[in-house]
Length: 341
Image 1 (cartoon, rainbow, N blue to C red):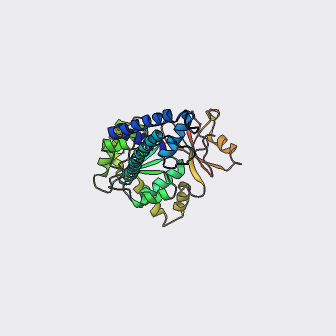
Image 2: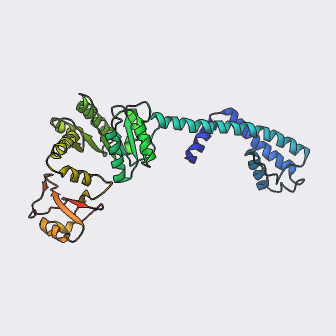
Image 3: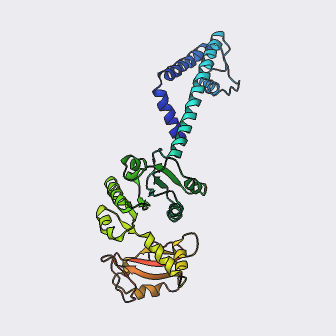
């Protein structure tokens, strides 16, 4: 932050000829004062002494441990002090303007993101969106950019920031190239698209996916969809994963009438408490062996194996006699995240 501030001030000074001229005159005055005082003033016996005096004087501290004693030196020092008052005031104004401008840009979403390896979430300002951002941060602890068609940062994002969640606001949408670049789409790791609340939601999402994929070929795109008939179109556009959250929510809602399955699902998916479901990479030593051998190996540990995904057909298998292939993924229930078994 301090480095950026000094860089901005330096750029301002470079473009302001008057300020640059005053700084140059001040530099010459420091040299002249030293030459005049040298040999007559024990306080100015070296260049370090005059530099110390110049710095302390320019910051208006003035310890009084060193000072000119010749008439000419004192006269030159008065000119230096007058110039210092003017230049310090000008720099103070510039610092205030820079801080105010940056804060204003943060509030209205026009400040460009300069970090990378982050997640971008596009959606409307509502409770479900904030819940997803909170869940995402608790899961990965990475910086998040909230992209939305708003004029200023919503209270929900301010509340998340108050919780310690590292989330930033950028105004705009994925169809706008400027908004994507302000979000630093080039260096982002993930992009989550939450469906808009209108009849053109899937059509708009499709356009967003294509534009995002053009800007970043490697980014992982997770998209919400309203009509499952459009899944193939989304996949052709470049999405990595499609989720119909309404369909999932409705099924859990209906199941709640007959059993408590929804409670279990919520606990497994919520990273705030209890065990969770994780996708785990398998060691090559399990290739060619049956699933029951793997299950038996971890019976005594706090790891519950619930299924395995075949890397070829992408289906999930639960049969204990399933023959494990290289690059298959395992699904487990565990207290803590497991990277590999």
